[in-house]
Amino acid sequence: MATVKRGKRKAKAPALRAAPIQDRAVQTRERLLDIAGALLGEVGIERISTNMIAAQAGVSPAALYRYFKDKYAVLEALGRRLMDRQNAVLFAWLEEHKAGGLDGLAEGTEELLRLTAEITDSEPGGVWILRAMRAVPQLGHVRLESHNEVTDALLEAYAPLLPKMNKRMLWRRLRMTVEFGYAVDEMLHDDDRFSRDEILRDAAHLLSTSRLEDE
Image: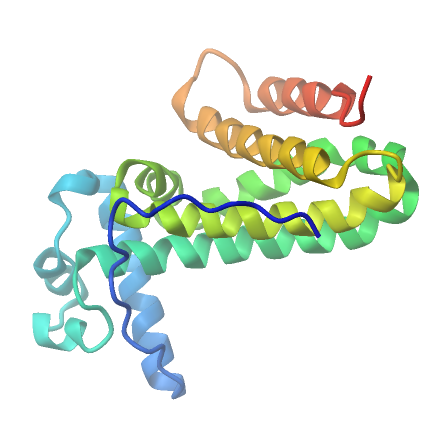
């Protein structure tokens, strides 16, 4: 597996409360996250607060603090939940398509982009969560950890198909495709000059025709 040198963190990650294990507590935490995600889409990153989330949920701030230390911990939990759901789709997609080799993976690229976008759409405040992962320094590690995990999984699938290619270079290029995929996901919500089908089709074309191997 390729190794990647990590840079120094510029912002301290927010401390997370331990995830609850009792069904009722799990349901309460998920409900708080759903409400927080919806509020994030309504008021934006700067205005959202734990007091606002608690009021919308009909609980006291103290009750919310049982699950989340502050608003950045809420945003981190939202980011991790979204990324985990998107990653699960990618892992399942890899299992389905890798047997078809490079051609099978290329042909399924639009499907992967579409499935990923559907996860974002189904998540309360989904695109705003993606924006928060980029805009808030305290949350950058969530995005990077997730994207690196995805790249490792892609490398495991692609490396046997490109045995002559340097694995470090392959990892780097796969990492770029991951960034491109998430940029496409955001573009679906940011630019209404083009239809969703046009964006997904063109993005899949660019990804599937790009050459990962050395010239």
